[in-house]
Amino acid sequence: EVPAVVRAAGVFPLAARVPEAKRDLVVQVKAFERATLAALEQRSVAAAVEALASHPVVPSADVAARIVRDYCQRIPAVGAALDGVPAC
Image 1: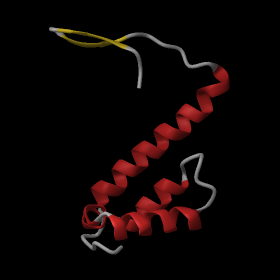
Image 2 (image 1 turned 90 degrees about the horizontal axis):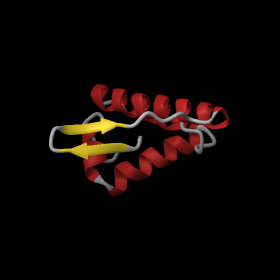
Image 3 (image 1 turned 180 degrees about the vertical axis):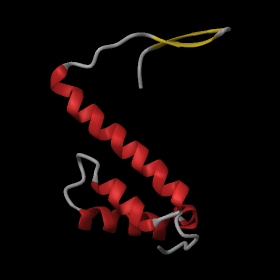
Image 4 (image 1 turned 60 degrees about the vertical axis):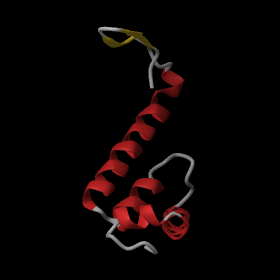
């Protein structure tokens, strides 16, 4: 997410510098986002767990696995997107 100007001709991002103290966090979250998209492309529960475990606020792979399992059970579309199994 970056500040942007929206005009009839399109959306134009404004140059923004991330403070050095926050750069590592931004890089980690971006890696998580890319890994999440890859998990969806692969339709892989294991890859989804690995992606979520890489997020800086998720403390462990065990917690990530529980979160993914809970999402699959409570939101059938998540399970359908991962291996096509609603309950993961």
